[in-house]
Length: 303
Image (spheres, rainbow, N blue to C red):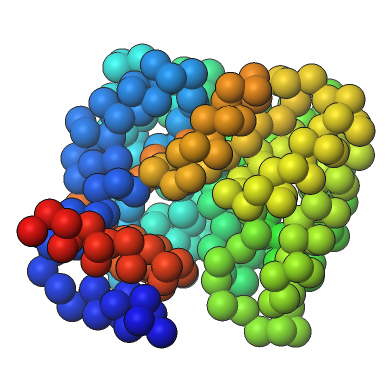
């Protein structure tokens, strides 16, 4: 209860105070800082996926500005030699305002990455966005099969059907590329599993299904139970280390992350940055209130 109370208070605290802990989980407020942190991860044998932090937009002018920012991010990261790719949220490009315009913006970002033989991951948001996001993914994949992927959430009851349907697009040369995560949005029980153990079970079942279809999974979790389960599935399916990867958030469970890297598995870190870091930080705290107690101790320790 104490941690939840602190997590609830933090959105109302001064930003410079919140930044004391946020900088562990955010790669910088500027692109230059993010690129340098990506290069530091690369030096440790870790790949990245860069994400520009942003809030919900209300105008198509904002969507246009966000597209231009992503084009600049790609150009800058490629010129700097970052070993990694890019993640984006469809709502950041106007999905909730004009679906066709959002598609055009996202397509342009993917086309930019494709110029460098690189890749863009279309993130999955809450359930009202799911069908539109998958439609945009399929349209762009038709044109750029090697340069775009999407995210599926294990807690949604529809996910196994989505895997089976999207697997029809896969080819040996360009397998469908998924990031599989548990899912963090609050969804009604009619469409989403809520029990922790049930979600774990579904995650591993979905991962098994992806491997059966010979798709490329990005195994996105910090849950040791799921990591151990994933390693068992990798062994059972006889996958080589270029047929999957593990993914984690910037600054989270670094020791567990390093153990996976040391075992020779590919690791990619989700690298968020940008001027809208404050909203991202407070949302992460609500998702994981236990972090709040650690933060308070750190603040007192700093004096």
